[in-house]
View 1 (spheres, rainbow, N blue to C red):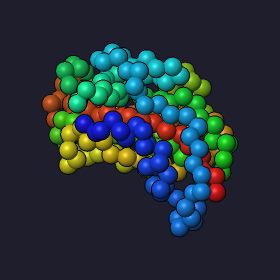
View 2: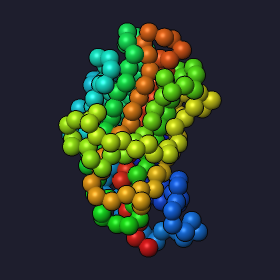
View 3: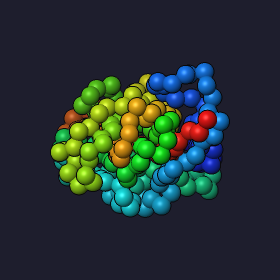
View 4: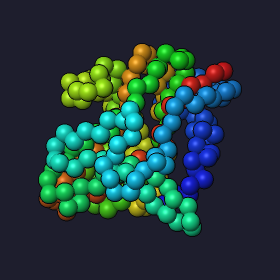
Length: 208
């Protein structure tokens, strides 16, 4: 499990580079401004995730994303998790961010961390994908257009519970948008019942 100190240093850590830059990759940002963030520190362990302005939608199966906590060394960390283990069904579940305003700056992006545990295979049937939508109305998830984003999602070769960082450039997008984490897995197939965890979601702009 990652050290809680990452929550303090998150904004500094993520400004150093962009995953898929369309601008001059040698230009370092002069100033980074955090627009919004969610560190999941209000999580109530093992409850359905219910955080203001976040959408928790189960497309297939009865289970939803869960609020989870982990305590080590007297420090408790909160995060979001979906595990298909013992769900009794095939699961497709969405965790969708609050609306973000992409017109705040030309250069902007989102950063977050993802971990996995008990992932037996690298399969689209047990996976986590990250999407962006500019026409999601906040209610009808399946009616929106979702475009996949290139994110750093851990594979089965990554150690369990080891959070890896993603930093996604959104400079090509304008208007209002939402970011979605889409989980797929199965509680009826033990090779597809692995879990993914999400933490430290950050929307920022660059001024340089």
